Image (cartoon, rainbow, N blue to C red; front, side, top):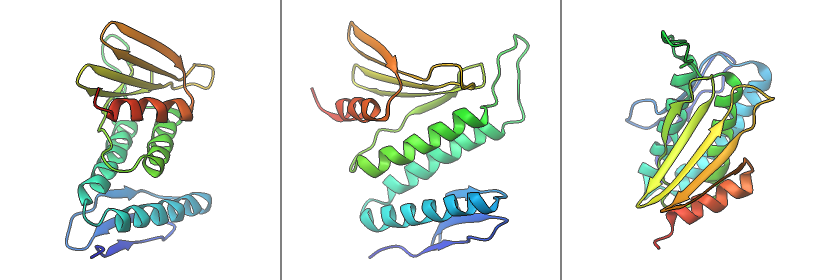
Length: 178
């Protein structure tokens, strides 16, 4: 049985709520162009919900990841005494949310949950670990800074400029039992 999903598409707010549960994803005020993105997100999440009716935790984890990224972007704590920035800039949070959603569309089944942290310069780092494998995805705050993917297994490690195909490759690698 597919859970019933309620979604408000009004210009002022949107939310996704499985029937009988608390809100798991929300969007604050949205413009007309963001409304189109909200509708696409709604359709995507409803599709996920129907595909994973037996595994609602999968969809819940996606919502938790997206909400955690958004909380970091909206954080009131902007700098510490050493000048490290803890609020994630819109460019970094937008890229992180976009590529996490895209990865969920492609990679089905068990999706590893990343540890999510600010990089101290307005960017965001998503860190996945499984056994001895590590993947670190960094989205930088500014356009002129390079986003990258770092991966490590034992003594072998490398960093490459970000590309979505390479992210998928590394996430599939992480999920494999070796």
